Length: 231
Image (cartoon, rainbow, N blue to C red; front, side, top):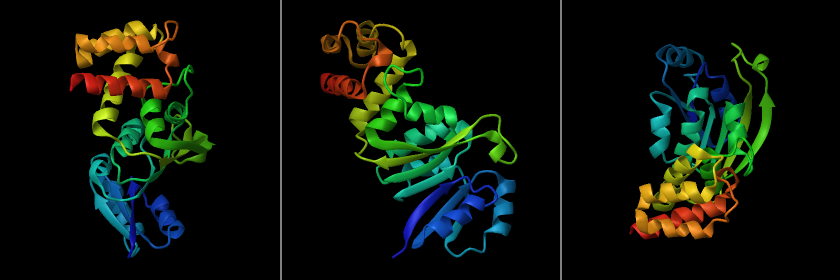
């Protein structure tokens, strides 16, 4: 039985064909939104038996697809939303993404660093994240204005809609004030997300800790408290 992979952004089919050659035993569904590129890819790689070309919105498809592997030379404007969509879809066990280097920096960031934030928390809670390589604009044609990185995501746990959905909401609230003391910011966020009775979890946060220094495990613990408190 064939295994299936999903490619987002067929382009001219260069990466699509490389995927076919690199993934024996897989059939690849490749999705392209742009009509002109879709027509061009249909002529260049439409004949490949292991490749099915689809015109559509790949970001929407990835939210509900039932494939274990996703790969993409990702349009930079959807890199962060795509990473979050992949985290939410437990059918996806692995993803290989070419993304804007700034997005990759956020995915692999450590607490306390400039790039650490909501995207870091969600992706690192769900995936083992590794950066394979960095690429300058001159390695592409036409050259983009920014550098790119290749990121590998390997799922290490399932996304829990209640718990990790709350992690997303809480981290978005917390990191809107990333440089302030975490206790004060969490009190405001907990009140908004769970109600006044949920603010007591603030005692779990060390007094001197700032939002930018909160480790993923503590954010997840606080989110779990909010879920239980609301229920």
